[in-house]
Length: 164
Image (cartoon, rainbow, N blue to C red; front, side, top):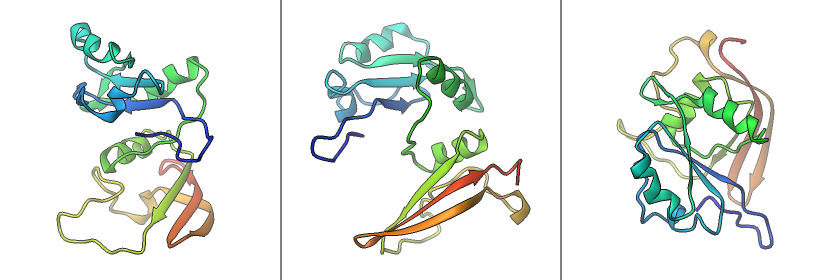
């Protein structure tokens, strides 16, 4: 749901990155858009398709395509013009990679659960092309480590690979 789980807390504005506008209309995100403000950022320019989402309360934000996905720099620019100067990205490996590659990430909070998964097809928190040389990596500085129940939180600031 991408909502606040703290009793009495304030729900954030939800921003869904959906390049081709394929979020199911039956999803909880869409179904609760009248209750929790929701923006769907998409490259899809079919305004007829937009109306399927807007009738549930979603707002559509059209973004240019870059390398087959949303242009995240353009998205950040448009959100900034609306007074949104900070986002919490809760994405999968593809979106996380795109955000790092676009140099829009300033801080990382990585949770590690005391569980091991693996295998050659295991998902990674950062997918994409990968980085082969240590000198090209995204560096995390000012690290802090916290124990939250049985999970570990690693928090730190990001130095994009172009600045390392």
